[in-house]
Length: 271
Image (cartoon, rainbow, N blue to C red; front, side, top):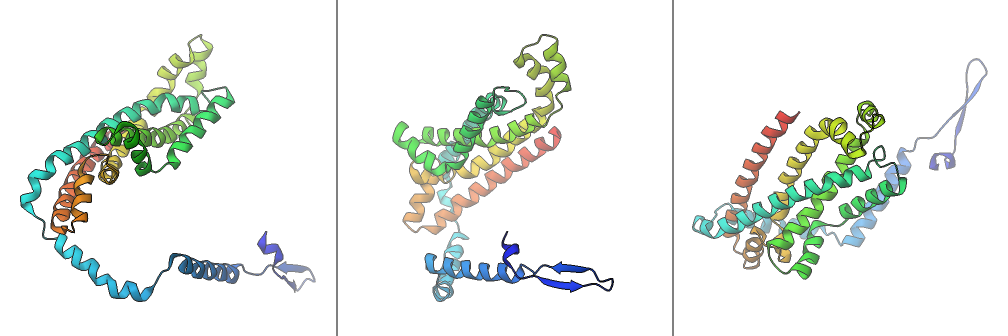
């Protein structure tokens, strides 16, 4: 639409035909980007001088973290296991709960339009809520601890897996489903035998991938009292004990790498 407001140039071809050459939008786009960049700098208070003078402190902290306190390892095991357990439980329950919601959201299965639209809206609403905020609300409802973190991961998994799953259902081959439905099978029975085998590999792969991410997300839920290794991170950062922070992060990286390697191995088998 903006291109219509720009001046045009008329060219006369050798055969006498007149054509209109549209002006390039590139200068306008560059000016808009420069304007928005300047506006962003003013709003955020970005100061290049402060960045240059304080960036060395970042490397000081990194240097301290690269010398982790190995004696701190016994204090990490239990919170780290709590993080893995609440990630696993929240991911498992969320993936299971996402399946019926995905069926209701799929427009080719749920023939009632308002049910499909309402379910899609609910899943979209869940996706817009940051997991950290959900965990904070859960701590007010269920109290401090890993249960609140599990609830937050559970809701995030429903939104993530449910979204991808209903899109997969809407793109499957419906021939077998319609044939079974016409033979007198119920919607659930037709789905079970005609559609579920088609989406099962992607469903399991998506659930495993979500579990990988949830282990990382769960590590920061302790900042709002949702338990796990995040509590230790918050405590060590508060005391500026970066050597302990380095040890926590090292343990977390090793665990996440192992989980991702195992998950990737099985996800490849599902393809």
